[in-house]
Length: 190
Image (cartoon, rainbow, N blue to C red; front, side, top):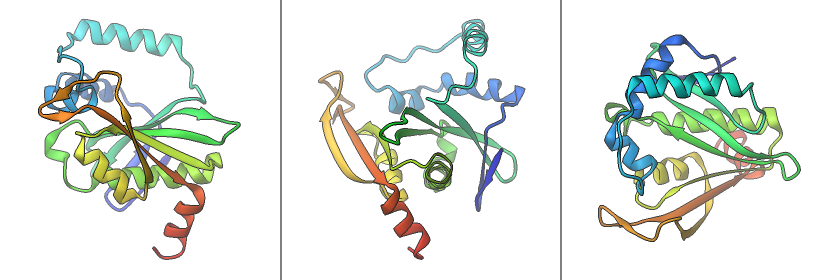
């Protein structure tokens, strides 16, 4: 399945070339800093990466509790992924995440477009009541992306480590968005 936007396409099919992109991305220190700021950067060797991919593909069929979609530009460049996880079917809620690892794709609005496309799909197809996203307070781009996509109700809480990273307090920040808020903004011309 594909979801087409103005400048991006989200796709749920995996191409063989995606593994090369993921391997390259897992070795980008700056991106890993934003993804896991309290973990020391350790590049991954190709052999270890291939083992993890093989193990993951053997051990998991498509789980309804977590699912990822690739982000491509309309020109076909693979630039990242979005995913949902912690899907609570009773509460009709889930968390979403986004990763655009390469710095040359940062600050171009790709994240906001990808998140908006994904939100629309998830609210429409899964009938969710609430979607949440979480990051840490020092990840200013993700905080801005969440706010631009319509997330509100931010909640700041202690992170799993009480340390400072590059001078930023390491605190978890969580946002939520209800389907009513989403549809009001996106179906009423907002």
